[in-house]
Length: 482
Image (tube, rainbow, N blue to C red; front, side, top):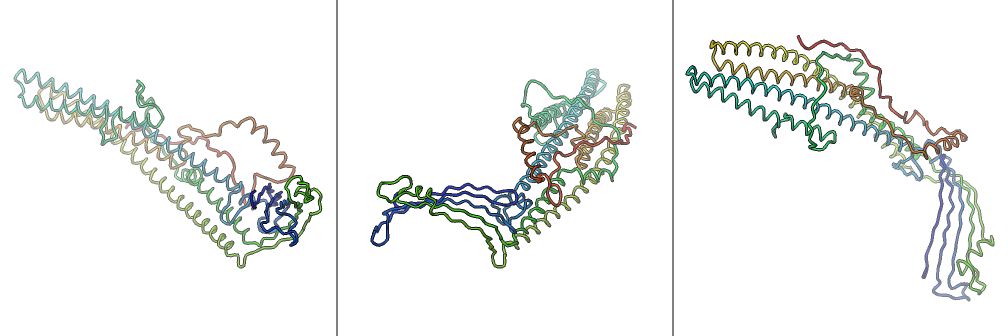
């Protein structure tokens, strides 16, 4: 130090009950500019060092294991960062992670079925091109033989090239549509983290469901209101607000602390040692023990009116009411989503049956028209129209079948059973060996103190791993083909 200065060093420890232990050292240095021994200044400069040991136990505000585990050490009004709040924040983060995984799997599943449809649509377009080519070749032979006119051959040729363009679009996809084998395959690769191209092509191996799968409404609604991750996440938010009310109500109390303090003081011309003038040093005076003092008593402090504490409680109550309202609205939204999913599932299945019957009828008509055309008993436009409608019916049937399977995914999403449906489980990874070795020792220390560090009033904060798996339920299946 040049003219004056201050140096502080402290160690603080807070117990779970709110008791605080501290050991601090403050060293002051001052150089006296107007040094006058006759006027009472013994030193031209001096050091003053003070060691303080203190134990402070709160009796009202800040007292209790529950409050300190909620609010954390050195808590202030409205700023709560205790271990229970941290545990709840972790649970919220885990719920967010589960929701992200669920949303990703939903996108993967839907993209998979879109890729399946792209392949079936491509097959239908290829078949339509084959039929169109056969018709064109037949008309060309008839035109060369003088049976047909050139405009009829051009009509058939136009149909073939239109079918060829449809095949090209079905294979590559267009910028303004979601179809196309290559486009859907790239989207699936992007979702599952594969490179854009690796010399291979993803081909769906599973076939879509073609049976009528029915769910019990009351059972599904109960599952949705229990297993949907949005509700579980909001329950953690409600619990956090409940704990914050407990902490805020503690700040309404007076500050009454039981204080025990002991101080050692040292004063001298030097900090360590002595300059030989007899002025001594601060630490020499400290170890002499002549400048010690202690105190024991009760400190009482409270602001007039304690408006901050009352405002904190009111704010916490409003936050809790808000979280309850969000929870109720989330429940209502989920029930509507489930009803919409049920309706879409019924619609998609009914349309699938209709498209299947349409498909059969269109190919029956196509066979009849082609047979009559080969015999020269029908016009060319009827044959080409039958071909177009047969290709469209084939594609629309698979479109309806894919929509039915997408509706089935939406039902499981709304019920909260999508991960089970896809046979996906979430679990924690293995802990390190040091954590396993430390846990029994720490747990035994807590048991000796008879403090349950896993429970809190009014109820448990976290039950640990969520029981994801459910026993399989029987359903009713009815064949689509009719």
